[in-house]
Length: 99
Image 1 (cartoon, rainbow, N blue to C red):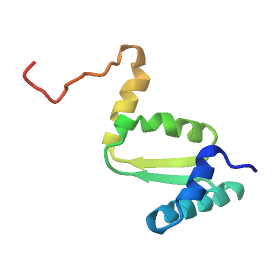
Image 2 (image 1 turned 60 degrees about the vertical axis):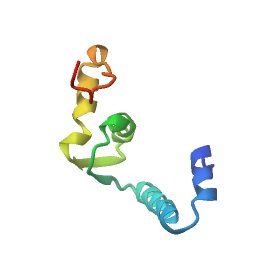
Image 3 (image 1 turned 180 degrees about the vertical axis):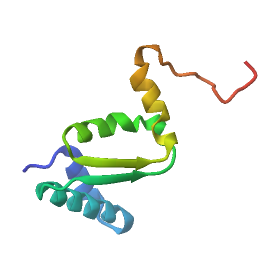
Image 4 (image 1 turned 30 degrees about the horizontal axis):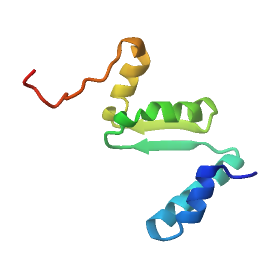
């Protein structure tokens, strides 16, 4: 199968040390999927601002991820966004407690 532009970029540019490990991991995941396997995804750290749920939702719907284990800070914002999306808004300067 023809690789998309992101895969082509990674294969061409990620050839050494830690970046090469990403290529190896992607190939191993592709092999796992081709054999009918599924991913057990474990995450830690605050990735909610990346709306990780949106990225993972498609993989979950396609049955490529069987289980997700994560700290609550990964999903809190995504859950709020998915449940109350039309009422959810970004608060600029949220670190400034004076207002």
